[in-house]
Length: 303
Ligand code: TXA
Ligand code: MG
Image (cartoon, rainbow, N blue to C red; front, side, top):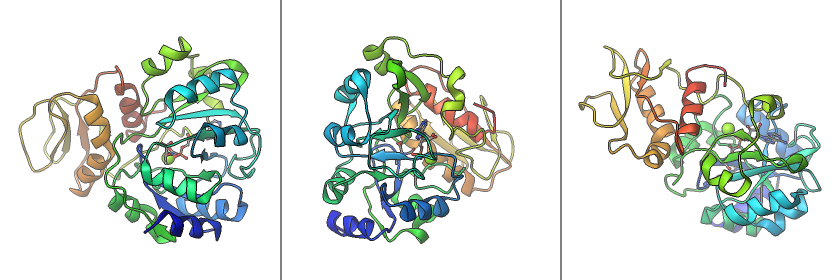
């Protein structure tokens, strides 16, 4: 499947499953309100939860959003890559895709297939993670097709996603950097550019999509488990005795490896139909902040 075929399907108002370096997305023409409506429908996503506009590069982002000097600096440093910026909307993204907000979320993905499709299409594409709303994001082609393949005109296979966690969402409104969603770019990497990020707790309302129960498998999730109980599946971090229902996030305790495997292993554990999925404690440094965020949501705790 070529980028040209994907661009043609998108121009016709169709949805396309697209690999990115973070997770698989379900893409639609950002300017086409009926395509965007089909996208919300396909995901079962509440319409108050706005989408991310994906662009090829900083130049294309400038047409979509007023990034300001703070946004420009972050984009120059981290794009293409796993960072999404929230800034005032300029043009090109339908009100439905923004859930009626005056702001827009924008990111330039690093994956070569996403880049090829964006360049062939020539405009912004909204692309939420390709899962049905509330489920873990797909990080493999097979998982993406299983989740939303039925509503896609076309699905592109980019292999497993290198990062495996969604992008970090940072608001740059009023020249203040606020962390709205921890993700594939760590807080420390961002703070090296911005200084300390503003407290996101006071801004929870400003990220409308942060529902408590999210990224949830079917089985209940039990956090900070040292070992599985009978009937449970186990997501281990660090050496663990082997077993049919034991899944290794990272034997050598590498947070990048654990991030890349997290969603696929949650799904694999779920398929064994366990009484619960027990998960080892994960340290809070680096990508651990985003991993713990997703795990707490999978367990049903309010973020
Ligand atoms: O890595 C990613 O970001 C993936 C890949 C496919 O690019 N996409 C993704 O999209 O995770 P989605 O729709 O699942 O998550 C978008 C997040 C939501 O938490 C949403 O509430 C937030 O971005 N968001 C979007 N527009 C916003 C806005 N104007 N203000 C605040 N938050 C916004
Ligand atoms: Mg999502």
